Length: 198
Image (tube, rainbow, N blue to C red; front, side, top):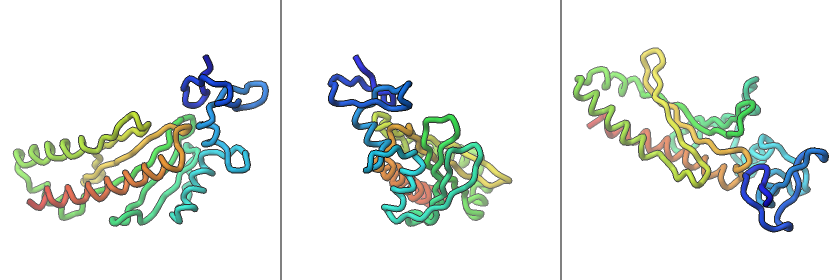
């Protein structure tokens, strides 16, 4: 019984796998994973190069951030109807590709919350918790969603992020993550404006 060294699925046919890594340490790899890590000429491409290629193919402009703790860190500016800033990165020694954004309440909405009674604050917190619970996705897709409420210098906001394993990240999944991120930004903005203006 042979397992793929990347996705760890069992490979049951000798024709459906190859070998990956340095010659003396080569490990079995399934054809699906092999296609993800090789370009059309059969050369090894790192995840950074593949993401750069996918962004270029989709005409998405991006810039790189020099972050020593990251393998790569890109910012995608003015994404979606809200003109969001989306970040895509991989931390050193981590198998996860992370995509996400940070958003803060406007001064008007922050002021609205400050004027809430304790009962109104609890009602708002309950509404936020319910909304955040709708952001989950099916874990069988290999995509994991998370969020964190943040407060900086009296301003309230949230971080939203999606993760997937590097070896599971192909162009289709990457673009799906991008759509989920943009959609979440729009839904969050709509939710906050409706909830705080009622």
